[in-house]
Length: 514
Image 1 (spheres, rainbow, N blue to C red):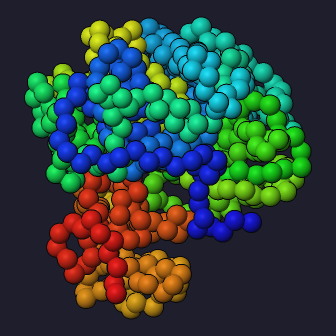
Image 2 (image 1 turned 135 degrees about the vertical axis):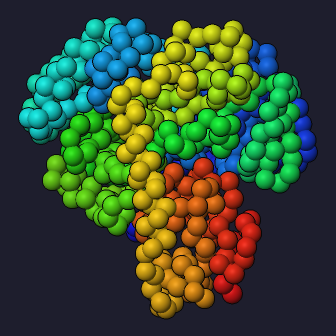
Image 3 (image 1 turned 90 degrees about the horizontal axis):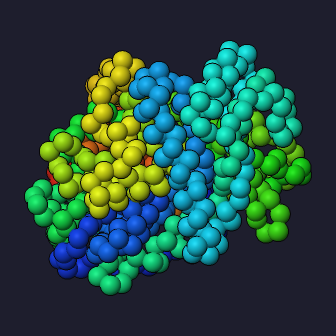
């Protein structure tokens, strides 16, 4: 059994690391893409094919963040989305969402075949199911809505799963793959002829203009006629109020060898506790990837409990031979559950954004890349209205806005009022909030006994961070920024590392108490 601190995705273990250079001098390109995941790499690939000189800027290594932590289902079946979208936006707008995601499946399949990409691409049916009678009617309604939008779907009473269901919706013509093998293959086609990929290059600001200037944390500048923000959460807000229009959720995944043959197909339920599963080829056989336990970031019980709950759940269904890997993932939800893809704001005609994929990023990322490529090269796209960040606010979205931002206010206040431990009595491998020189301080002691002390005020918007024992990280309950125990950034929106409590400025180097 793997140890809880060794959280690493299957997709990263089974691919080589990349080694693209960092940006060391100021450059100018036609289009700059900030973010080296599926969205950013696909967008850059498409823009280069259109004749533009592009630069991809990635703060870490490409495809190691959200894309490298997914379940990797290439599907337009996004749990219960179509019935509510028809009711909120009308059938024409819902058609745009359905068409975009269905097109993304065929686009990715064609790309794999045309470029001979070895990424374990497999056609699979996708199922959303329930074992709770309270959700049967909702799945029936969803199946009718999907069928009315032209999606190859049907309501069924049985599935290939080994346990019974009360109802399910089946989408044919869907797929699954190894996301990192796919993205790394596309990435290789970007550098050259004036185009670049830069890793270890964190963008922190944009100077708007007819030619925009992206500024990095190291003071380097990239001038570009077009900027695409594909950094998961927008690193630059541009007065778009994205911090108030999205919220983060985490979920958990494990990879197992099991005695039984894993079922054909991809699955997700709609009730609580949540469950998602699929198989994947591995060393001549197939492993089971099993996940769930979704919750808002830095909310709820101890994070290690989520892994234990999933281990218990999978053992009730299958005979587990070995747990290979486990990892967690994070994604952002928009207020109406449709991603924001298009111009960052109505006042930024040459700055584009793609965010808020609600854990359905494989097709949504690809659709986003196509939309942004078309907006840059043609000025329009047939799906642009439903994805537009400037679309109208629905009644449900307005209610979600109130709830989520009220929670942010609570976290801002309550975090600063919590009583910390008054002494540095910490075991090796333990992290907790303590009082250090009269200040609320985050403390972690590594396995060698080295103590790390941090100011727990998030460098994004000032919320108080909470300890994540499963990943050994400090997580923000407001907007989802996450920091390593040494204060370095795991994922944004924060752009600066955490401070040592004795220091009054943001530090780049780890904050170790010698």
